[in-house]
Length: 222
Image (tube, rainbow, N blue to C red; front, top):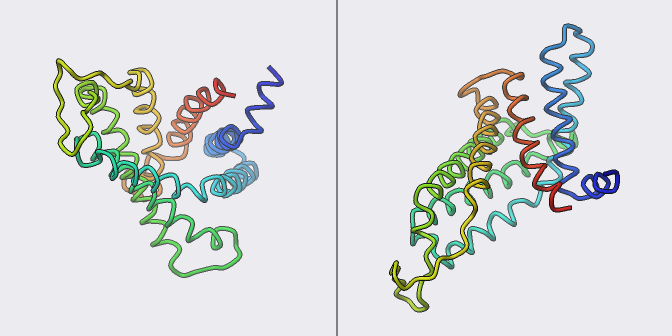
């Protein structure tokens, strides 16, 4: 168990989830505590860990745009599921880029006057990306098998249910888990944008749930 935990926290993804779990736990406790001094300390912990986690996703736009490029080169416009995925990774890429632009400001190195509006736009794209992810998961559950039939080589791609060979689809359990995770995380940009304020306790609690769900997949791989 100790060796497993060591491999988990020494992996980039595992360490990020560990920091996220501490961050959201501190957020919930800070909101519930009656001690103002402890609340200030825990809020500082939350903010510092949130900043630390930004470094883990600093180059996240590269993977997002690569996925977007792969969809454009394959069948991003050939199906509803493909269109949703294309929109999702485009929004994720834009979110990462805009957030990266404010990193020096967040670090206290170089303050800029446009920090707040840029972060509002970044969080808006994050909200859109998570919404598309939830929509894509629901679509895949309902219509995924029919869209994931193998297609013949060539410019004309036909789907013939009798002749086509099914492509390995994402298990329903994984899709449901992803819908739950993204649905929980949706509350974060909604709170940050003040579109649907739910409070630190609710946001922090849903962050704990989504973190544990994604962490268990990483735990199984290490």
